[in-house]
Length: 242
Image 1 (spheres, helix red, strand yellow):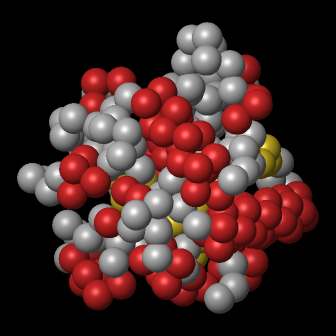
Image 2: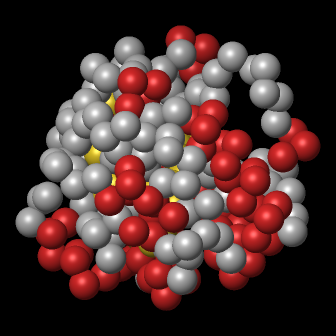
């Protein structure tokens, strides 16, 4: 039932990935009965992503914002359809690149209540890469994510992915202008701070956005662009489960 609702609202279907997950014990108790999740990913345009190998462009910034808006609208439609079959939901909006003026450098953490990447790994859509990206099996990291929490167990949950499949590849680590990653492989027992410095990434994104785009914000995308799994010609690697 839930999968049918998702398929009916994700068009064109081959530009999306989706899955469901049991999040029991993984999210704050304040969410109460909403212990199950839906993860949806929207593919990013290959031409645009190929163009930002050296840094963000205005076209990429526009595409990023457009996809986020599209995902927000889609989740609203899905919520309405879920409600018709007596399933209540909470939409978790796409993570956005904040205006640099909103950043508090003294805030103790850059974590959020609900991690889209965590929901996606629990839904079996991919794993966390060395630069803290969701590397999806279908599109590599070239994907934007949105999540919904629901109060009923889905018909069938996917098999969670518990560890990285990046292997010895360090392309994103070497190309990161912030030098925010150290190459340590992710697994569910490894805290993000062990392998990735989110503050270094954030600060370099602010700097790059200002210098290259002459605007405030936080966007880069180089690690997304260079990942070999995400490149269109290498999607066969993803199909093979690498």
